[in-house]
Every structure is written in C-alpha cells, then in structure tokens.
Amino acid sequence: MKTPRKIIVHIATSADGYIARPKGNYGVPAFFKSIDTILWGRKTYAKGLEMGMEAGMKAAGYGPQIKNYVFCRRPQESTVPTFEFVNEPVKTFAQRLRAQPANISG
Image (tube, rainbow, N blue to C red; front, side):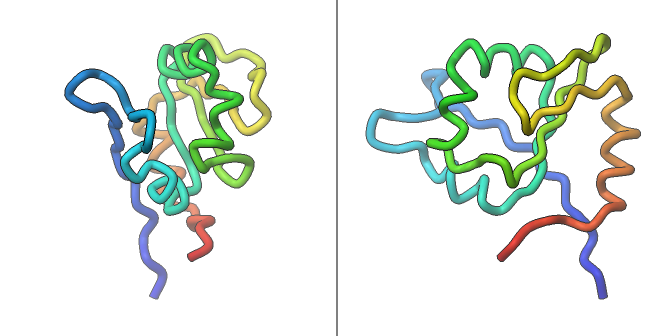
C-alpha cells in the first residue's frame, strides 16, 4: 500500500530569533534529508537570498535534489536553479503535490 505524501510545516527559529548557533544548527541538515520539496513565501525567499541562501543551501544540507516553489502574485524568473515561482493558491497547489509520489531516498 502506498503511503500518502506528507506535508509538514517547519518553522525554524530560536527564542532569540536565530536558526543556528556558531557550533550547530539543531538538526536542520537531518530534517532536509527527509524531505523532497519546500514551499516558500516570496518574502521569505527574498530574505533568504539577502542572507546568502544560495551559497548556504549546500552548507545547510539541501541542494538540487530538493524542489523549491515560491508563492507570489507576480511570478518571475528565479535566480536559483532549483526554485520555481508559482501563482496559485497554496491549498490547491498542495493538494496536487500531495497526490504525487514523494521523491525521498531513505
């Protein structure tokens, strides 16, 4: 029997408003190894780029095997190859995504 694809809300922040400490990032790489898709808001995507997300993607443990979708009213061309802009309600998109098989190895 095929297991339904899960959609998990993951909000990573600590009490002081940061995700990581100088000596660790509290299991974020292990989490990213367990997923195959990330849904982003446009402002979060923009802030990520501003903070060096493109360079930090490899260090965080996620990369070309993870598909990223950015939700916005005016889709644009992405500067990051594994990101695609989407102009569709999140619920509709998520329902279609959930109907597809997951692409997770292990």
